[in-house]
Image 1 (cartoon, one colour):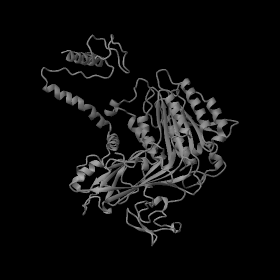
Image 2 (cartoon, rainbow, N blue to C red):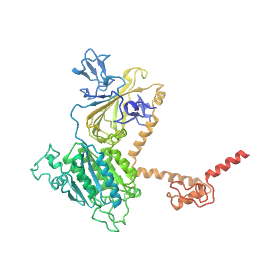
Image 3 (tube, rainbow, N blue to C red):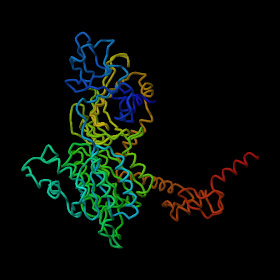
Length: 617
């Protein structure tokens, strides 16, 4: 069953909730909501003014409020506080309701009348340790992307290999870059000093240096971050002259690649120049980091890159330090309201397992492909900048809040967000995902972004039959404040009402309100969130334990064959049990499978002969 997905972008595991402790304990699937904040709205739901908020709980006016038309007041359904309507609502009447009070407008979006926010910033961070042909493919893709950028969008460029190069785009006559040692940690103060932000003015002795308002001049920022329409020629010139990293690796060693320091420089640059502004750090990488902070493997080729077994046995010497580095890096990006995107094109691992925490916390994009010349990368990268009907709808600087009835508590959220540690009476003691808060930061979000919100039921006994009075209703409101792709600041509110049920018919009503598709998604998200290396190892061990148990009971004693895909034992096993593609088969080898050299028939041929004999007899 689908309840409210088209109108509100909401799917719930249970659309009626149990009202007693006994019934609540029998619901194995958690009570949760999958919410898509940027779901396309119905016509008329975008309002050109700000919201009217409850003075007590800050919930927005919605169709479920109780309106006193004579006294021009309204009672909040979430906290019961009474509020007065301001002068713009003076003409309010039962036959003259504002859009946010109409029953079918449970989701509306308010457009701020304030000036549009600053245009987005795109800071390209390019790995130059990749082969020449791969670098050529990447340069071609970046050149095309520059033509697709909005003219007002701001652009910056950083390249890295053994060292980090910050390219100056503000002076086209003599292209210049500033070099940072890729083996050393780079702080924000180092970036401000090395990039000469205070050559013509004194550095403030105290306080945080961040943007034009706090210490930097617009002229100094424009040397590195410039509108695309003003630096297109310079940027194309930089791309034309961009060469493979000159610090060539030895034949028995990996390339010196300082991914972590390059990202630190990028985050420090946008953090100092455009804090709180919509900005995306777009990392293009073609191999593992081998130098500086965030290293995942040494340069020595005799040392293999960490595998799942290494992680399971705690035998990955660089993994923990890299995860800690990118965890702190993610906190820095969240504080700056900036996004990290990763475009990784390589046949080898590049370290996404370590970097993913920064991408997930900031709502970034991840694209994995075999090559920068592959259509998966080229088409995906182009779609980031397209503004057609099927654009991604990239938005920024979001804050997501949840308000709910007193009978419901918030356990937490699983999704591309970061906690704002806004504690309140609605927080549950049970935490799932990012909990102990009623507000979360969404640095980046798009049309496909969805959040999974988990709730805790505080059951109550209902006096009458379920569904016969408003006391049987519970409500929650989802508020998303964000910068729209057009630059406007908007607030989307979604207010939902559902029923408590109890009594002898409660089971039937609960089943009728169960959404199995939403429940499957919710359980999958919960399982993937909880699944760590140890849990995954236990999952893989279960078939082995079952096999050992069967062997002990089987007579005659069976032979157990444990094998890896495409290994010699796997081919032996297929030859004995189900040789579906042999050297004399009419069909070719199936994808990912080898020919089996055996005269035995497959299970399919056996069943066909068995059916033929059954018909003949």
